[in-house]
Image 1 (cartoon, rainbow, N blue to C red):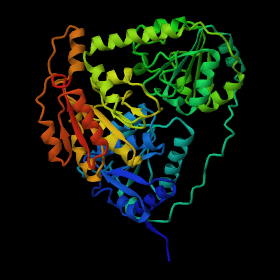
Image 2 (tube, rainbow, N blue to C red):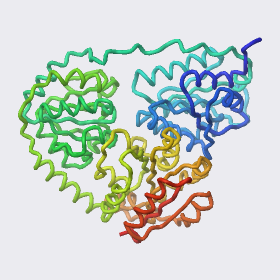
Image 3 (cartoon, rainbow, N blue to C red):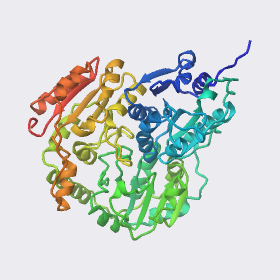
Image 4 (cartoon, rainbow, N blue to C red):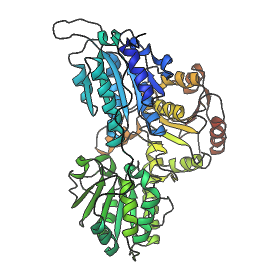
Length: 528
């Protein structure tokens, strides 16, 4: 008996063989063949309410699980809708694979359903690569290439499209996985003795720690302590080094005065970070001493920061090999000075966005230590990114790079799917929440115990503040909001509007134990 099935079904079977257990998406007439094999292969499908939501769910799932997030979408508008999420995953180094259908022929025909002039090229503007597979072998090869690159390179979103006729046509099963990464010894093959000597001799060594260093935690902490190095964290790098490490300046790189601190260093090591605009908000880190860059992405090693020494290697392997080479040395960094500086930055944060720190700290007091948090572009999250004491790496996810609105809720849904039984929370602003509010239906459908912190300051406050600072009369920053409590209940979610910090804490604690998502409505005028 032949094992041939339609290629659309074979793709699902192949993904299952490659370790994919969950697919996010929305079926349509153009991609329905991709759905033929999902249940048969034993894959769980999560139905989003919008393709952008499906993409953010895949993103959140990938960040929480460490596995690729996979999404199925239709030709044309389905792919266009998910492109925002693809751009976010690209900029934040997330393993996302989007598979779409495409029209069989577009050059000689116009007016077809879902037709685009260049669908493959459009997707390629927001992801690592976008290719069309014109036969089964090409589809299988591209999927294997994507999976291998997710493991071996800096992870970024990727797109594969398959013509409808190919999805419908018979195909032999994909071969079993042919290529796997050989198990390494964990040792870095780069000579790290010069870096060890530089750190040991430095009087003020400084590390800048990004999310790419997440697996280097214990060894990185040991290196810092051995040479008495101070450190800064990017938002993605929080929790890798203990929050209470006495020489940890925290996630304050975006503070202009952090450049003055960096200028004091006589040896700077940037590990697992792009040192991007959204990390620094200035063109230059601020150092005048040698800069060592440790990264798996050659593009980062050759960027405008111009490292004197570029080390193309994984952070965890580098730190494991560096640890025994660094001699104990005395450092001129003073813990009391670091604490004083962090206090100054805290007061700056409070002055810029008054009253939020107290709410953030009350929230932190009742959120479980192992909670996975997803935030949106909102002032509440901007403050929390600076003052929330992170104790675990990769447990707070913020759409820093692409900077999209509407990320938190669907990403948190994906994160909760990846970690059943473990606490997950979303934080969104009133405007951004409405970009993806429809995904409440998915969260209710899944019965997820998901606290959703909704910060409603009644306007695009960050934009209003920016306009005022630029001496522009604020306009187009006010919008009439719905009754968010009634809206959440209409979807079948729980909702509450606490009037005090104590009531907020009670609402959050109960939400983690609920059988459905709960919207917790906070306003500067009602919570104090």
